[in-house]
Length: 278
Image (cartoon, rainbow, N blue to C red; front, side):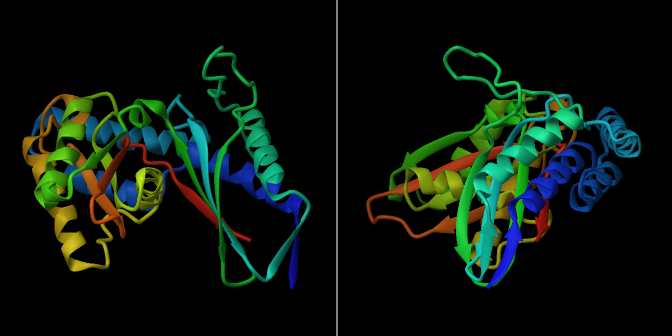
Protein backbone atom coordinates (compact mmCIF):
# COMPACT_ATOMS: atom_id res chain seq x y z
CA UNK A 1 0.00 0.00 0.00
CA UNK A 2 1.56 3.28 -1.13
CA UNK A 3 0.95 6.53 0.71
CA UNK A 4 0.58 10.09 -0.55
CA UNK A 5 0.68 13.19 1.63
CA UNK A 6 -2.26 15.58 1.27
CA UNK A 7 0.16 18.53 1.05
CA UNK A 8 1.63 17.11 -2.17
CA UNK A 9 -1.87 16.96 -3.66
CA UNK A 10 -2.50 20.60 -2.77
CA UNK A 11 0.74 21.62 -4.46
CA UNK A 12 -0.16 19.69 -7.61
CA UNK A 13 -3.64 21.23 -7.74
CA UNK A 14 -2.24 24.73 -7.25
CA UNK A 15 0.07 24.22 -10.25
CA UNK A 16 -2.72 22.63 -12.28
CA UNK A 17 -5.19 25.51 -11.95
CA UNK A 18 -2.63 28.16 -12.91
CA UNK A 19 -1.36 26.21 -15.92
CA UNK A 20 -4.89 25.49 -17.13
CA UNK A 21 -5.76 29.18 -17.05
CA UNK A 22 -2.70 30.20 -19.07
CA UNK A 23 -1.64 27.28 -21.30
CA UNK A 24 -3.98 25.63 -23.79
CA UNK A 25 -3.32 21.95 -24.48
CA UNK A 26 -1.79 20.86 -27.82
CA UNK A 27 -5.06 19.27 -28.96
CA UNK A 28 -7.02 22.53 -28.82
CA UNK A 29 -4.18 24.56 -30.34
CA UNK A 30 -3.89 22.04 -33.16
CA UNK A 31 -7.63 22.17 -33.78
CA UNK A 32 -7.56 25.97 -33.96
CA UNK A 33 -4.66 25.92 -36.40
CA UNK A 34 -6.48 23.38 -38.58
CA UNK A 35 -9.68 25.45 -38.46
CA UNK A 36 -7.77 28.59 -39.46
CA UNK A 37 -6.05 26.83 -42.36
CA UNK A 38 -9.31 25.39 -43.72
CA UNK A 39 -11.55 28.41 -43.10
CA UNK A 40 -12.48 30.24 -46.31
CA UNK A 41 -14.40 33.19 -44.84
CA UNK A 42 -11.89 36.07 -44.44
CA UNK A 43 -13.32 37.48 -41.20
CA UNK A 44 -13.61 34.05 -39.56
CA UNK A 45 -10.04 33.22 -40.61
CA UNK A 46 -8.78 36.51 -39.16
CA UNK A 47 -10.55 35.87 -35.83
CA UNK A 48 -9.11 32.35 -35.61
CA UNK A 49 -5.64 33.80 -36.14
CA UNK A 50 -6.26 36.33 -33.36
CA UNK A 51 -7.37 33.54 -31.02
CA UNK A 52 -4.09 31.75 -31.68
CA UNK A 53 -2.11 34.96 -31.08
CA UNK A 54 -4.00 35.47 -27.82
CA UNK A 55 -3.22 31.91 -26.69
CA UNK A 56 0.47 32.43 -27.49
CA UNK A 57 0.65 35.70 -25.53
CA UNK A 58 -1.16 34.12 -22.57
CA UNK A 59 1.26 31.19 -22.45
CA UNK A 60 4.43 33.29 -22.80
CA UNK A 61 3.31 35.92 -20.28
CA UNK A 62 1.62 33.36 -17.99
CA UNK A 63 -1.58 35.38 -17.97
CA UNK A 64 -5.08 33.87 -18.24
CA UNK A 65 -6.12 33.14 -21.81
CA UNK A 66 -9.60 34.41 -20.82
CA UNK A 67 -10.70 36.74 -18.02
CA UNK A 68 -13.34 34.19 -16.95
CA UNK A 69 -11.18 31.70 -15.09
CA UNK A 70 -14.24 29.61 -14.30
CA UNK A 71 -15.58 27.23 -11.71
CA UNK A 72 -13.11 24.44 -10.92
CA UNK A 73 -14.36 20.95 -11.82
CA UNK A 74 -12.33 17.85 -10.93
CA UNK A 75 -12.67 14.18 -11.76
CA UNK A 76 -10.56 12.30 -9.22
CA UNK A 77 -9.49 8.70 -9.82
CA UNK A 78 -8.10 7.19 -6.63
CA UNK A 79 -6.22 3.90 -6.85
CA UNK A 80 -7.33 1.25 -4.36
CA UNK A 81 -3.71 0.55 -3.44
CA UNK A 82 -3.00 4.17 -2.53
CA UNK A 83 -3.67 5.70 0.89
CA UNK A 84 -3.91 9.47 1.14
CA UNK A 85 -2.44 10.74 4.41
CA UNK A 86 -4.86 13.52 5.27
CA UNK A 87 -8.14 14.79 3.83
CA UNK A 88 -8.21 14.32 0.04
CA UNK A 89 -11.05 16.72 -0.73
CA UNK A 90 -9.72 19.37 1.64
CA UNK A 91 -6.33 19.10 -0.07
CA UNK A 92 -7.95 19.73 -3.46
CA UNK A 93 -9.93 22.72 -2.19
CA UNK A 94 -6.84 24.22 -0.57
CA UNK A 95 -4.89 23.77 -3.79
CA UNK A 96 -7.61 25.58 -5.76
CA UNK A 97 -7.62 28.47 -3.30
CA UNK A 98 -3.82 28.76 -3.41
CA UNK A 99 -3.70 28.61 -7.19
CA UNK A 100 -6.35 31.24 -7.77
CA UNK A 101 -4.87 33.57 -5.17
CA UNK A 102 -1.19 33.20 -6.07
CA UNK A 103 -1.89 33.05 -9.81
CA UNK A 104 -4.00 36.24 -9.66
CA UNK A 105 -6.93 34.44 -11.26
CA UNK A 106 -10.40 35.94 -11.08
CA UNK A 107 -12.53 34.68 -8.18
CA UNK A 108 -15.95 33.89 -9.61
CA UNK A 109 -17.60 31.49 -7.14
CA UNK A 110 -20.46 32.91 -5.07
CA UNK A 111 -23.48 31.89 -3.01
CA UNK A 112 -26.33 31.10 -5.45
CA UNK A 113 -28.90 33.12 -3.45
CA UNK A 114 -27.08 36.01 -1.79
CA UNK A 115 -24.53 36.24 -4.66
CA UNK A 116 -21.82 36.92 -2.08
CA UNK A 117 -18.43 35.92 -3.46
CA UNK A 118 -16.61 33.23 -1.45
CA UNK A 119 -13.35 35.06 -2.13
CA UNK A 120 -11.42 31.85 -2.79
CA UNK A 121 -13.01 30.41 -5.96
CA UNK A 122 -13.98 27.45 -3.81
CA UNK A 123 -15.67 25.15 -3.30
CA UNK A 124 -14.58 23.33 -6.43
CA UNK A 125 -16.92 20.67 -7.84
CA UNK A 126 -15.24 17.31 -7.23
CA UNK A 127 -16.26 13.88 -8.51
CA UNK A 128 -14.54 10.83 -7.01
CA UNK A 129 -14.05 7.34 -8.43
CA UNK A 130 -12.16 4.32 -7.07
CA UNK A 131 -9.99 2.60 -9.69
CA UNK A 132 -7.36 -0.11 -9.81
CA UNK A 133 -3.75 0.72 -9.03
CA UNK A 134 -1.69 2.85 -6.69
CA UNK A 135 -1.93 6.27 -8.30
CA UNK A 136 -4.04 9.38 -7.96
CA UNK A 137 -5.21 10.92 -11.24
CA UNK A 138 -6.64 14.43 -11.24
CA UNK A 139 -8.52 15.67 -14.30
CA UNK A 140 -9.24 19.38 -14.17
CA UNK A 141 -11.72 21.50 -16.11
CA UNK A 142 -12.20 25.22 -15.32
CA UNK A 143 -15.69 25.98 -16.62
CA UNK A 144 -16.33 29.54 -17.72
CA UNK A 145 -20.00 30.34 -17.64
CA UNK A 146 -20.41 31.93 -21.04
CA UNK A 147 -20.34 28.33 -22.24
CA UNK A 148 -21.59 26.55 -19.10
CA UNK A 149 -24.79 28.61 -19.11
CA UNK A 150 -25.64 27.22 -22.55
CA UNK A 151 -25.96 23.67 -21.18
CA UNK A 152 -29.16 21.72 -21.73
CA UNK A 153 -30.53 18.37 -20.58
CA UNK A 154 -33.62 16.75 -22.02
CA UNK A 155 -35.42 13.52 -21.26
CA UNK A 156 -36.23 12.42 -24.81
CA UNK A 157 -38.70 9.62 -25.52
CA UNK A 158 -36.91 6.51 -26.80
CA UNK A 159 -38.86 6.86 -30.05
CA UNK A 160 -36.84 10.03 -30.78
CA UNK A 161 -33.91 7.80 -31.72
CA UNK A 162 -30.62 9.04 -33.11
CA UNK A 163 -32.40 11.66 -35.20
CA UNK A 164 -33.91 13.19 -32.08
CA UNK A 165 -30.50 13.25 -30.42
CA UNK A 166 -28.91 15.02 -33.39
CA UNK A 167 -31.72 17.58 -33.54
CA UNK A 168 -31.55 18.33 -29.82
CA UNK A 169 -27.76 18.76 -29.79
CA UNK A 170 -27.73 20.98 -32.88
CA UNK A 171 -30.69 23.06 -31.69
CA UNK A 172 -28.89 23.63 -28.37
CA UNK A 173 -25.71 24.85 -30.07
CA UNK A 174 -27.61 26.99 -32.58
CA UNK A 175 -29.67 28.60 -29.79
CA UNK A 176 -26.47 29.40 -27.88
CA UNK A 177 -25.33 31.60 -30.75
CA UNK A 178 -22.20 33.59 -29.94
CA UNK A 179 -22.60 33.31 -26.14
CA UNK A 180 -20.15 30.39 -25.72
CA UNK A 181 -17.52 32.08 -27.95
CA UNK A 182 -17.40 29.66 -30.88
CA UNK A 183 -15.73 27.71 -32.33
CA UNK A 184 -16.90 25.41 -29.57
CA UNK A 185 -16.23 21.91 -28.33
CA UNK A 186 -19.50 20.08 -27.75
CA UNK A 187 -19.84 17.35 -25.15
CA UNK A 188 -22.87 15.05 -25.23
CA UNK A 189 -23.92 12.51 -22.60
CA UNK A 190 -26.52 9.93 -23.60
CA UNK A 191 -28.21 7.44 -21.31
CA UNK A 192 -28.20 6.51 -17.66
CA UNK A 193 -30.43 8.78 -15.59
CA UNK A 194 -30.88 12.54 -15.27
CA UNK A 195 -27.71 13.06 -13.24
CA UNK A 196 -25.67 10.37 -15.00
CA UNK A 197 -26.14 12.03 -18.40
CA UNK A 198 -24.78 15.29 -16.95
CA UNK A 199 -21.71 13.52 -15.55
CA UNK A 200 -21.12 11.72 -18.84
CA UNK A 201 -21.14 14.97 -20.75
CA UNK A 202 -18.52 16.58 -18.50
CA UNK A 203 -16.30 13.50 -18.75
CA UNK A 204 -16.61 13.54 -22.54
CA UNK A 205 -14.86 16.91 -22.67
CA UNK A 206 -11.58 15.38 -21.50
CA UNK A 207 -11.18 13.21 -24.59
CA UNK A 208 -8.46 14.59 -26.90
CA UNK A 209 -9.96 16.58 -29.76
CA UNK A 210 -10.24 14.58 -32.94
CA UNK A 211 -10.22 11.22 -31.13
CA UNK A 212 -13.41 9.44 -32.18
CA UNK A 213 -15.46 7.24 -29.85
CA UNK A 214 -14.37 3.61 -29.80
CA UNK A 215 -17.81 2.43 -30.98
CA UNK A 216 -18.34 2.98 -34.69
CA UNK A 217 -22.02 3.92 -34.40
CA UNK A 218 -21.28 6.51 -31.71
CA UNK A 219 -18.36 7.88 -33.71
CA UNK A 220 -20.65 8.15 -36.73
CA UNK A 221 -23.13 10.16 -34.68
CA UNK A 222 -20.33 12.48 -33.51
CA UNK A 223 -19.33 13.13 -37.11
CA UNK A 224 -22.92 13.66 -38.25
CA UNK A 225 -23.49 16.31 -35.57
CA UNK A 226 -20.16 18.04 -36.28
CA UNK A 227 -20.85 18.27 -40.02
CA UNK A 228 -24.32 19.71 -39.43
CA UNK A 229 -23.09 22.25 -36.88
CA UNK A 230 -20.43 23.55 -39.24
CA UNK A 231 -22.76 23.51 -42.25
CA UNK A 232 -25.70 25.29 -40.62
CA UNK A 233 -24.16 27.09 -37.64
CA UNK A 234 -23.29 30.73 -37.14
CA UNK A 235 -19.54 30.33 -37.46
CA UNK A 236 -16.62 31.86 -35.59
CA UNK A 237 -17.87 34.11 -32.78
CA UNK A 238 -21.27 34.04 -34.50
CA UNK A 239 -19.88 36.11 -37.39
CA UNK A 240 -19.96 33.52 -40.15
CA UNK A 241 -17.69 30.98 -41.74
CA UNK A 242 -17.64 27.19 -41.61
CA UNK A 243 -16.21 26.69 -38.11
CA UNK A 244 -18.93 26.69 -35.47
CA UNK A 245 -17.53 23.60 -33.72
CA UNK A 246 -14.07 22.09 -33.46
CA UNK A 247 -15.21 18.72 -32.15
CA UNK A 248 -18.19 16.77 -30.85
CA UNK A 249 -17.60 14.12 -28.18
CA UNK A 250 -20.31 11.66 -27.15
CA UNK A 251 -20.31 9.34 -24.15
CA UNK A 252 -23.04 6.76 -23.60
CA UNK A 253 -24.38 4.62 -20.74
CA UNK A 254 -27.18 2.02 -20.59
CA UNK A 255 -30.55 3.50 -19.66
CA UNK A 256 -34.12 2.46 -18.86
CA UNK A 257 -36.30 1.04 -21.64
CA UNK A 258 -38.68 3.99 -21.25
CA UNK A 259 -36.03 6.71 -21.17
CA UNK A 260 -33.47 8.53 -23.33
CA UNK A 261 -31.66 11.23 -21.31
CA UNK A 262 -29.45 13.52 -23.39
CA UNK A 263 -27.20 16.24 -21.90
CA UNK A 264 -25.26 18.86 -23.85
CA UNK A 265 -22.36 20.85 -22.42
CA UNK A 266 -20.36 23.34 -24.44
CA UNK A 267 -16.78 24.54 -24.16
CA UNK A 268 -15.60 27.79 -25.72
CA UNK A 269 -12.66 28.05 -28.13
CA UNK A 270 -10.39 28.25 -25.06
CA UNK A 271 -11.06 24.63 -24.14
CA UNK A 272 -9.02 24.58 -20.94
CA UNK A 273 -8.31 21.20 -19.42
CA UNK A 274 -5.35 19.63 -17.64
CA UNK A 275 -4.52 16.45 -15.79
CA UNK A 276 -1.82 15.13 -13.49
CA UNK A 277 -0.98 11.69 -12.14
CA UNK A 278 0.61 11.41 -8.70
